[in-house]
Length: 471
Image (cartoon, rainbow, N blue to C red; front, side):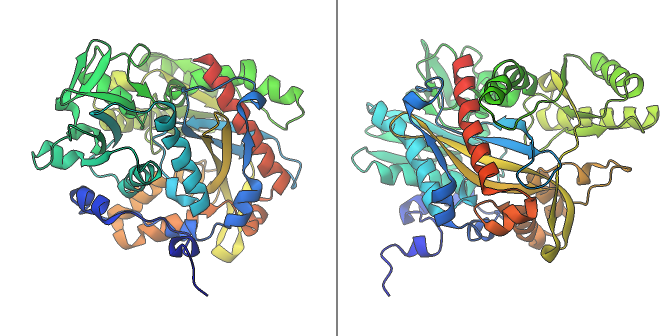
């Protein structure tokens, strides 16, 4: 039988040949093949399980404050249908995994991000920054697929895909009669930024949109007069301060989001957290909480990504062990971000017991996990929640040893470690530890019900709406 869209049959997404050619020099190193996750997703279940709220149905309008992000959840121990949910964090538009979802969901993400162009038809020339952090990003192909998808969505808008590396090397220039969608490492672009009043410019052309909110901090370092709160340039995810600074997000959750959702009957709980602003305060606060009050802690640096600097403390640790873990967190974070000042304030979270996943057919038992729900704007101004993946810890949970690999569910860090030892194992790590959420076997392994998944989607919509109201 003929298939109208062969990519749909493969649960894959196309990229135009000229887009691939334009971006070719960004490759040249191993990329993560996420197709094994995507092909485990059931697109019909995804269509049935995703939740949508129109603008009037949301507690607060999102306007142009939000286009795409995700919410990570953990579940309390318990039998299916009896869990309490915890919000672990709200991720910005920098998060990887756009192509983990089935094709119909990826198209919804492209549609949501691209809706900006329907709301604000651009004047030529203009620049869209579709950049990422790190010069070798193993998920660059996701950014290319997003750019190409937006261009295909708006054929009447002249869009020129620009390679940041080729721009830096003088091999490519910005078009003067189109929208220049610039994709590549933000470090390749920093020398080209300038300000014209409140307008951020790249190569003297107006930057109308920044898609990846994590690059905003990198831009302000080289262009300090750029103020994301007072600019003609739209940052697509204006709630990024809450994804950068966990304590700020937790404060809103405790003050507004959790009470609201509890009142509506949703199964949600919070955990205690503390903010510390200096290294001295970090060490002393950890001593008081862990040693005196016997509270196990999770340490989270400011604006950390891929799990950098996240560490765990338990009352069973000796003072020497505790100090070593704190120093390891500080060293790892400061090495990644060059300056110690950039990793404060720290957020300290109470470690709470959460459920364990069981996938005996994969040899995975007693694994900590979190659940990622994508949230994307709809063209009508509402929000759509899309079940994405469950991320498993790389080792079995052991309460007595309390070691990082059994507690942390950041698969990017695990994958990077695997790549150092055996590059051929990278994809297998991803395909094993990231479980497709639109899959009944995955729900069974997580010990959760369809209703609980839909509730996570509904609560994610509410959380994003409230955070937008806080901006």
